[in-house]
Amino acid sequence: MNRFEQFHESQRELRMLLAGAVESIASPQLFHQSPAEQRHTLAHLIHRHSFLDLLYLLDAKGIQRGDNVACRRLRAARSGDGIDRSHRPYYRLALSASGSIITEPYLSLATNRLCITVAIPVYDGSGGLLGILVGDSELDRALSLLQEDDTRRSFEPFFKAFYALFSCGLLLVSASLGLHGFVALRGLWHWQNPLSDFTAPFQATILFTLALAVFDLAKTIVEEEVLLRKDVRRHSTTRRTLTRFVAAIAIAVSIEGLMLVFKFALDHPQELWLAVLLLLATATLLAALGVYVYLGARAEGILLEQRRQNLAAAAPLLNSPEKDTELPPDP
Image (cartoon, rainbow, N blue to C red):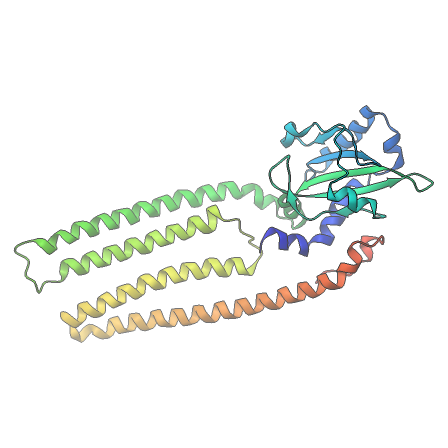
């Protein structure tokens, strides 16, 4: 499941997380402070909440008041005073809302990553709009914190490094097997080798098959564990990875079984049943894999349908002025 789907499933919780942090300073007094006091207030808030990337203020017309207050990771994004942000979606949404709003994920100009924005309109005692308090948060960081996955995420680069290291080892093994396979092929053209001797081609075929199987295993590890962004909490992620591993093993074993059928048929017909058993075991493995994939996909579909129904039931309340605590709980 991609990040957009995760956002829509967790939209209510993300709104509570971001708005709950930013609303603590969203008061008319903030807009009556001096620029230095405003920056101090925003900096104190962003220092307390690691999932916030940027904080800034807009006046009633959408003009930014003061520079961005950025976290330590974004030292280059601290300008912005006087920029007209009245065309931004969060400004238009906040104008028509009586409470906090969050935007759909979009590509941040400051981080070049997907982010979401929370905007809170602030009114004076007579109901006039004083301005809008805006906060940006990287989507991945907010989701990790929301799902209590931030600790695992901090170790992710080390896990990827180990997977990459051992995948390189497997690639070297694959290259070595392939090299030995080419060496075994030299026996095909040896003048003393009778035409009825199939030792060299069978040996080369076995070596090449093992080389391809090991290469496919290394390729699967790199793609699944190093290059792809995985959501370990999703059964579909585990199912896809397991399917690819088992499929690679089944292909290699099938080819080996076929080679043994030919070898035993020519040299040892009495042992042909061993090759047939190997092919039957491969067929059983594929059948079990098919059942696993079917049942897993069906269970995932049921869970997704339940989430869609819950989101559809909660959608009318997401933009309501009522408190988030009055929304129905997730399953």
